[in-house]
Structures are given as structure tokens and as C-alpha cells.
Image (cartoon, rainbow, N blue to C red; front, top):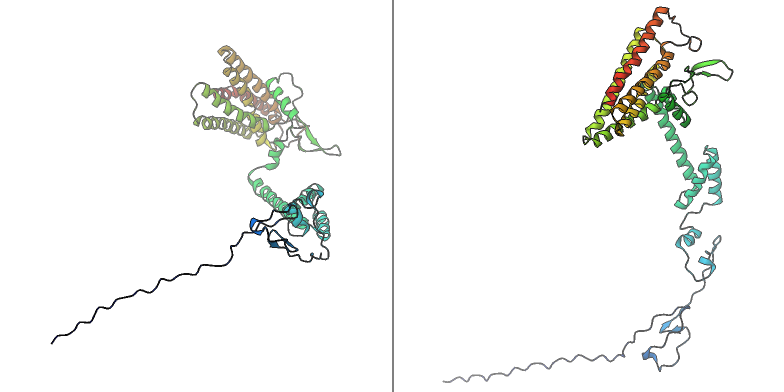
Length: 386
């Protein structure tokens, strides 16, 4: 028995899909809008032949207008930049007039600042600076408060320094020693180099308004015979720099020269000061402000040492060098002999003392003066040898 096989079925694919072709008209890109300052723009090619445009329609755009903004109370429109409408106006001016940019101090704030600065004790010279802070956004009241706070902080710091530093350092005596002027410095330098014909050597005491003698001496600015610390300090710095220059010219300079020279100079001053203080203690020599005076007198020798070193740097010969050194020593010794006489042998009429000096004590004090003067030869030789 035979089975009939079914006939093969033929597969059919569906018909392809056809997307519809858009039928909307081509969109023409409109021209950019025009401004009142620009001229009429030419019509787009796609718009040619369409006739006239409607009112309020320019370049393919419909112009809509709104009602003008009504000014509020107290508002004034900003002035045009340069005095012509339609020109550029800076942002600060426009915003400042609207109260949104640079701050504007109103009449109440201005009156507060002017009266507040006068009531806070701020001088008129600083009030101009405070008024100039308005352009940075700081009004008068805030600037005056900050200025008053700064002055209070500075006064508190100055008082703290005066109270704590004066315990360790005699600040009044130091201020007295540095109270100098240009004429005093020139006259003092001439006195240190040529002290032979100077008269008088006595220091000038302070005088009160009534004419009575006051306690203390005139500052160096008023008395050329008064010792100061300005010239010794400047001479010490100059001596250190000259020593470095001399070693550099001799190809022996290294950074340690500055420290070694400064240490040597300070050691010489300390040894001399201690020896003079020891002699004054043994001879019962008393005086007010004697420490600063002795330090100042000991520092004047650097002027003669500097002159000697300058002659050595000029290479004028060893004979000229040693002659300069001997003259500098003699001038310094004579100056100290006459100046320290007021310390070792004070005048009873100028500085009265309770200690009575006998003839034997007077002789020992004079010998002590000569020892101090002669010892300058050793000190100056040590300093001049670099």
C-alpha cells in the first residue's frame, strides 16, 4: 500500500513596505532679526514673490511690543555713557545708580560716618582715607570702627612691649642714646678724628622751665659731648663689612668671616666694659646711666680702626699704614681721657655726690684713666688685625 507524499508548499514573502514620502513644503531658514540701527534686510529668496509682509513683521519675525516700564518712586534712570543715548554704559555706573553695584552711602549713613569719625577721635587726615574706602564697598561707619579697633590694638601692643621689655632693657636710656641728628653725627665724627683743640669737654645738664637744674643730661642732639650709641653701632657694622671686603680682596673670604669678626668685636667691647666696671667698683665710682655711657665710649674706637683699615685697602705702604694707626690710637686715647674724666672725676658743681674724694683717691682715679687710654692700643691692634 503506497502513501502519497504531500506536495511541497511554496513560501511567499510579504510585499516590501513603502514609507510615505513627506509632502510638507520645504522650510526656509529666516533671516536674523534686525535692530533699529540696522538697515532693512533684503528679502530671502524663498520669500520673494509672496507679496508684502504684514505690519510688525520684519525679516520673517513677528515683532511684539509691550507697554513701557513704569518708573517706581525714588528711581531715576541711569545717564547714558558719554551723554548720548544708545551708547555703552559701564556696569558699575548703571548698577550703582540702581543700588545693586558700587555701594552708595545715603544721607543717613554719611552723617553717621562724619559724626562718628569725629566722635571716635579719628584725625581729619585719616577721615579722607576712610571716605576713599567707599569705592571698595565699605561705608564710613564700618571703616571708622575698623580704624578705631586697629588703633586700640596698636596702643595695647605698645603698652605691653613697654611694660615687659622695660624690665630687661632700659628703654628710656636707649632712646636717649639714639636721640641724634645729622649735624651732631658730623660734629662728633670730626671730634673723634681731631680732638686736640676741642673746648669744653663737660656735659650739659638738663634745665627745667624755671631755670633750676634737673636730673639727667641733655640728649646727644643738644650736646656734642654727650655719648651716643648711634655712631658706635654704625661703626661696628661698617667694621664687619670692611673686614669681609679685605679678606675677599686677599682671596681669603668665607661666610664664617662675618661671624668671627662680629664675635671678636663684641668680645673686645665686653672685656673693656668689664675691666672699666671693675675699676669703677674698686674706686667707688658711682653714676646714673653709667652702663650705656661706658658702652658708647668703648664703641668710638671703631672709627679709628675703620680709618686704619681704609688706608690699608688703598695700598699706600706699611709706613703710612702704621702712621695712621698710631694717629688713630692717639686721637682715641685723648678723646677717652678727656671724656671719661667726667665719669671718673665728676665735677661737684655739676653732678653733686655724697662720696667725698680725697687726694689719694683722686690720684688713683687719674692713674685708672691713663690705664684705660693706653689699653686702647691693644684693643685697636686686635681689631685692625684681620
